[in-house]
Length: 284
Image 1 (tube, rainbow, N blue to C red):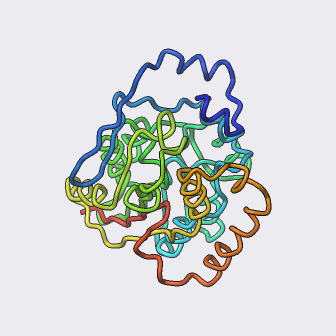
Image 2 (cartoon, rainbow, N blue to C red):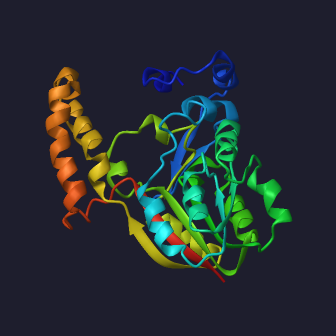
């Protein structure tokens, strides 16, 4: 919790008190597929997410992400779409603008309120409460950067599938520990109470097989977005003083090649995928 505060997120005494007696949690990792789970899982509360997202008014919820662009292209013919963990509703808003019927689920009450204030239908409800009343209702179900936050991924997936029509499509994205993220030291966002599990493409594939899902598409975010943080960490581990790589001049020159990579998108970095892996799965 001190780590979050050191990085500019001033947490209230109420939030700190919730976790004061949380105790110890340990990361267990599968040596075969790389799946990781913190046990016991210490998850984030509504208040925790409200504060780190600055009541949904800060930069925590992105208006445009790489995986959103992948899914938008594939969702053209889906009439009714559910997004679980929709945050401030920016992705659903784009679907709405195309005339599609949407529904959002979000546990961060401030984010849900912000989405509703813009006309996006979002309910504050847990998936296990929502699913029984909405069986096989949706043509597509999406959850982006959500699975790693939940304590019981199998139960979560099963409830998501309850809402999906037969032959419906499931859109999933998670931080990819088999990419650049796995080569970096742990980030504050990748440990409890924020993330309680860790994923790789192989782990997602095992999960799909266990639940009788067919994976029809994979996508890997380019590494460009995380390269500055990666190189900063490399310099730090080699003993370079922090003032060298944290000053504005360094950041300016470091940003130039990243901007060029993002603009021209060369194909030479596939061997080092970026932050996110994306999968499209079909319900049997």
